[in-house]
Image (cartoon, rainbow, N blue to C red; front, side):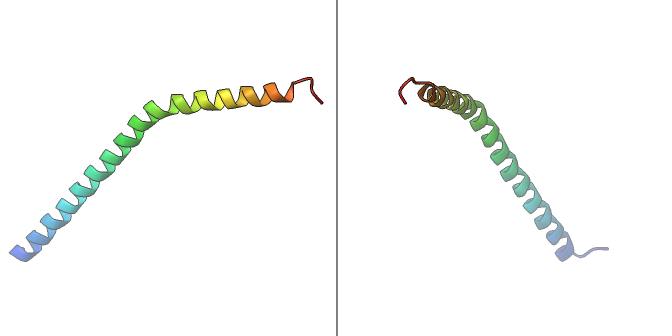
Length: 62
């Protein structure tokens, strides 16, 4: 039979894994949420930059 000390170590190891899984899932969930909110804004900003850059290049001023 296992002693109480061994069982407690296993419980602690299990608690650490649960805490790690929770932290990782919260971080991944936050990144996904931020990408859903932030990504369209970044694409729009890049599109504006890209269009303005080529508009300046196509000016008739030498």
